[in-house]
Image 1 (cartoon, rainbow, N blue to C red):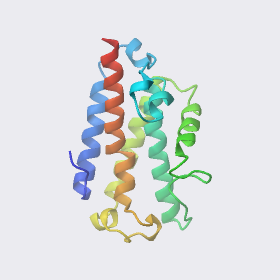
Image 2 (cartoon, rainbow, N blue to C red):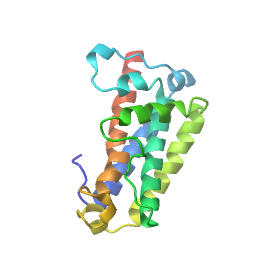
Image 3 (cartoon, rainbow, N blue to C red):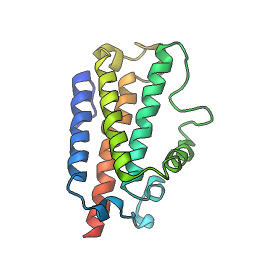
Image 4 (cartoon, rainbow, N blue to C red):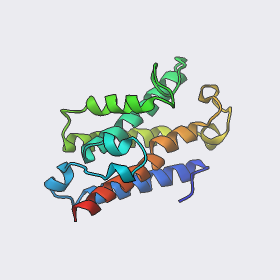
Length: 177
């Protein structure tokens, strides 16, 4: 699917990706759910191939990016203006943040991670519904979005991230066969 450019497309792409991800996970055995990733890192580009150790790590990553979005929007709406990424991080070093987000959930179980992800998806979708198409996809409609759009942040935290998660989990499952 092409990158969403309207509220309707954003909601559809996000919900479709979410549904595909949940459907992929539902039939997995406990061994598959909790199995360790073992990708050939010499063939993969991107730090995430080494970062995430299992499906739980992918789910908490999605959950934590939902939290980044939810907190960013809420704070900025309340006049507490700040960037999307937390202090100390930028788009050059956010990989370090992702490792900390993963490590924060060392004691989180797969089932807990799945529930966190499901609940945060619902909150993100409800928040997306609260904005107009113009607020989501018109540059400058919300001054705190900078040179981007609010819709872009939603896409990054939902449909694009869900596509990434699906690709990674499918590759893991294919390698187990």
